Length: 300
Ligand code: R5P
Image (cartoon, rainbow, N blue to C red; front, side, top):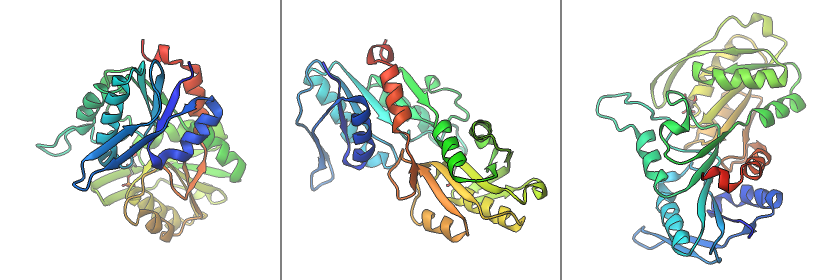
């Protein structure tokens, strides 16, 4: 029996790309809410004896988490074999320690909770920093994919003579990987974050890269403070205008406009979170993973 794939309305585009590539059945579901704000879910497709996939990125996780849980429990009640979550962007990964006394380590609590409701998880470049693997916090099989190939391809096809720039030590892992694939040099900066919107960045010697186009790469652009501070320094150092690439376009409040105003060449993101800057399609790596990783394997 064909697997069936459902989505929240926000992630319709990436889901349609996946359906075209995978040939799965498209599921029909209504996600809504009652006037008091409580979530309402209605499954309109037959799920009996089917492997069920749900696409849900987690840029607005607090507003969809109840719908996600109600969905997973209900399709199981209706006879679904297993429920697999495709979360192109996995939320609640950045609070991976108690930065201040008394704080909740939300990455751990969220993972423990989600593990109760779904059978497996596929995601792209989650913020693995202090946690080295999702297995440290998730109790279900998970598959982590990397956007390095599509990002490197985009750079090769669109930028001449690029210099890849990682804004902080945490970004070093994927920036060096993407640089190798794109055949470009790279530098990694140092960052001190003093608060949500208070970031300081230091830039190494960049004189020899004056003829290069700096390509700043980070996993998430949220408030964009990290990128804005970095761009300021790169501009001050007299480099060409920067191309900013974020894997996950979280962009809170005016972050996108603020980053544009910091005088950049272009802002480009992957379509893990829908945004007008999406230029790098990751549906291919997602569908390959779903194809190459049959549900049986994901849930053994
Ligand atoms: C943090 O370590 C991440 O890799 C990003 O650098 C960070 O989350 C970006 O956040 P913001 O856009 O708020 O500076």
